[in-house]
Image (tube, rainbow, N blue to C red; front, side, top):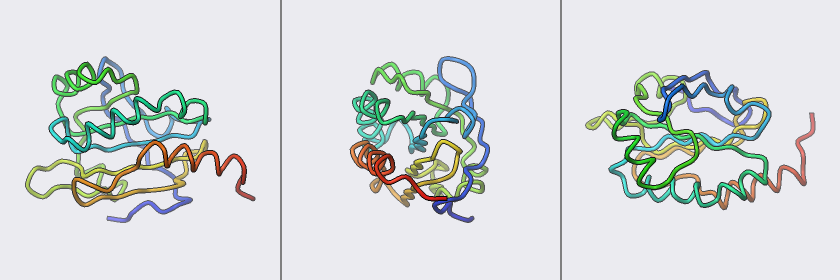
Length: 161
């Protein structure tokens, strides 16, 4: 299972979206910077804290030209309850197939629970990976303050072709 290094094209992923429709990655984030978060499940306190932090930072992320999506293996009802409980406005995907997402992105899968471990990607507007953060457990994940700082840096120091 290869990890996605900086410069790699983010693979095409499609999952159902809480509230209806689908999340189509990386296409749904095209033309903006994108943050893709794989979270372990609604039962994980660290994941809940991360999702709430990205929700609180939504204005500063939007001002920096970034949009966020998150997904997990949770079912539709569990995901809808999570969205409601935390007032999440970002697209949240559910019912992700952990094995196929792991094969496409290198995300770690818990061998006992079958869920995706916390994984985060910052994508450039063309869908290429800028940063990938892989965790093999509950801790070690993207935080919005770091993402906003990185976006400011990229704006001040655009990559050369």
